[in-house]
Image 1 (cartoon, rainbow, N blue to C red):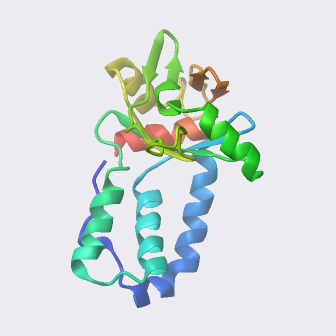
Image 2 (cartoon, rainbow, N blue to C red):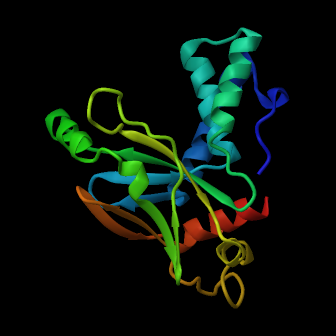
Length: 201
């Protein structure tokens, strides 16, 4: 998938003029790209539009206008865009109660090493940087992960459902097997259609 280029970034005034419409469209797209990982987490599969929205929103929120600072944000967020035969997802720990959340983040240290994509005989471990808070003995509430897909899995998703658009996919699921949290979360058909489009991009 092609990374975001500087020429695609709108200045703050131009972005303000289209923001409401752009955000509404990408938020709708995100609904199809989200997988609920049990009661405490969710995963969002990233693509160019989700990343572009994050860049524009960061520039807007932080009022970033210096060219070098804009370039830095683009380079940072481009890391979230999947390469060929990759999927990229952001996993968010979603626990409203601060005390419960802190306890879970401590118990779930090393969380990012326990996330998998499974289909048939294939089980692909997510790749991501260790994002624990140094010296704090806890993981972080947001994880940026990638799955490097074996060729058969990439082809399966790229090809789409059997028997045309109305056909069925084989089961694909996200799994977490951390001692503090175990989840098997089937990926919905509408999400698989989005991922197939990503891999064809």
